Length: 373
Image (tube, rainbow, N blue to C red):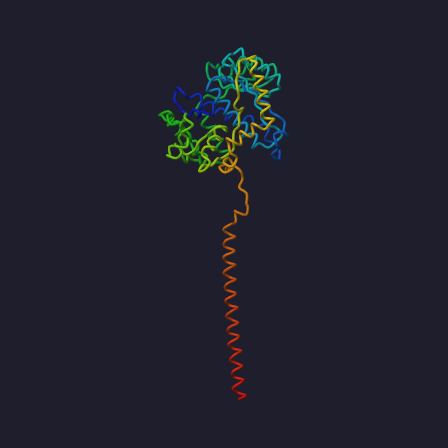
């Protein structure tokens, strides 16, 4: 997984804006699921269906999808109520007509809201359809947007996320405040730091000061393309941690079974697979072969062979530590040593008292013999 862009320069502002918008979107989507006394399992709750229309062929669209996926997983884990967020992703491929057709399919699936739509043309066309079904549309578009009042009159169900960077900074500060965080760590890419970034970072620091929080640390994210050099980079101290997709994480632990710890939770995505041309007869054959390998247990055997479970369990610190006999070895050693010392002292005292008693008895016997004689 490539690192998320975090530069505030004019050429790369959109990705970080999108990430901030998604945090605000998370707050909006949590509204129907904050009631209730206890957290329920996802399978026992009702789905709050969210349609997501993005250009997944672009790096920005893919980053947005990953951010939405992570936000939904976090929201479903911490929310208490009768709903969980169920995103439905479709690829617009930057084609407005395709965005319209996919929006119709999402509406037929009974989605409660449609989000994404990176261009204003896509947003307005989808809003025309959504108005008829009364499905709100939240657009990330920032280009050629008409005045707010005019947009609300023509498309009453269309909402546009704020493109003002300082509004989003205040949004981030509100999120920090809602989490009661007093210390914040900033992550940014090595090449992202410039004058614009410095100014916005100062603005963020000011907003955090207003809520009693402060920036404690700033960590740099660097991209590593050579997976074989991860261990050397960690050993040399060039990097302090790795953020890997799950298959690469297991491969890393299989190679370096000792010396590294895994912190969870995992954010799981669709996984890896084989891709064939549409209508290819190989697709069905591969599916059947994979199914046979799975049913026969061959996949599990290969997994255990190449990804030893003992390495994964040894390096996994995500699970809650459990107390066992080995957790009290120091207490046991101290207790045994103390008991042994007490037993030795008791034996010595008993032996000493017997010796004294025998000496006293012998002395009395000698005195009686002298008196009789």
